[in-house]
Length: 123
Ligand SMILES: [Zn+2]
Image 1 (cartoon, rainbow, N blue to C red):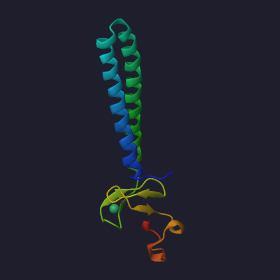
Image 2 (cartoon, protein in one colour; image 1 turned 90 degrees about the vertical axis):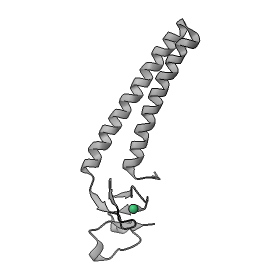
Image 3 (cartoon, helix red, strand yellow; image 1 turned 180 degrees about the vertical axis):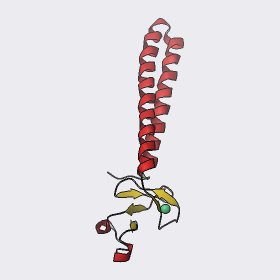
Image 4 (cartoon, rainbow, N blue to C red; image 1 turned 180 degrees about the horizontal axis):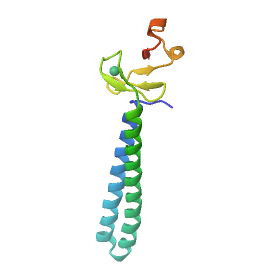
């Protein structure tokens, strides 16, 4: 699986999308009452339930990402010098999207013994 952004940012994006989809469904359902009257109320109720589920799922995603990001190691990106968080062994920088890895066998640069403990860069 390829990540265009870092794992934390892409999960936040998914969380945000779910909130928007959930709210969109609720708005759409409410519009159903105006358009279809009595039948629209049933449609509205169904959409409201799905919208609420979407909002709750995204809240769960945000909570999960928050838990993950507090335990993720903070490192200095060798490419742009900014502080970023890494999830797992390989992740992208949150700012310049450079792929970073903690696994020396996957790195293409800086694979000397002295650099073995610092995040390495693969392109
Ligand atoms: Zn960077």
